[in-house]
Length: 345
Image: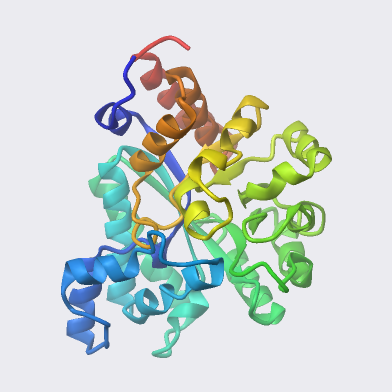
């Protein structure tokens, strides 16, 4: 079987690690900026796309994150946030993503004085509108930020609790890892877990496996964002495998942030062959310049994947969604049946 881009595009997929503020359409950035008088480096759409997509133009995660200053500048009012959320879901539906979990930090959208609740409401409204138009389900993950005061993470955890069963499905900790340990934010994760809410953390992206250790053992993560450097601690790897803790793998961004030297040196295939619960995600469709179909094609080409391996990775995503069990079984079963129409595995 030839695993072409068009074939991979047709398959049902998830994206469980995608940032709202890193996945805008550049034409939308330009349009909002013109309407709201927001300064941009350029108002030419393709020039802006090139400016915001990092390719190999950064040498670290902090440099990668600088792009978000521009995208966040046009996400400071209700209608703009609603529009961006709707378009993200639409773009994912066009890639045959059946379930997407959109993450962002509401505190980054308060430059014009919006209340945190209004920020969440805007994104949820945009996503729910997209669900009515397209074959996709959505969830929101609210992010704390490592480099910001842990009291702020606690406020965002309280916001997560407030929106439990209202569209928010989990709490995350994002941002630069070095010098900003997850354990500093343990109160936020205690609050979330004490209210029976899911937790995922960015860990092992720009810092070693000790970052993953803190995410699991201090913060109680149910999933790990990236986990690229887990391969450096095989004992911890076995623990995560044994407990079926999923890894949200973002191949392209890991290369772009110099977390790995090249796609071929990414530990994804090792994780897959160790039967770890790895799923593929985009991280940021604009900043990284990828779609979820691109990520599957990259994996096929770099690691010579077979269709059963592709299908297994896809199903790992459906197994890892932050949905109630019965709903998870339903969405997983439908995806598996669709995958089986192509070939037995």
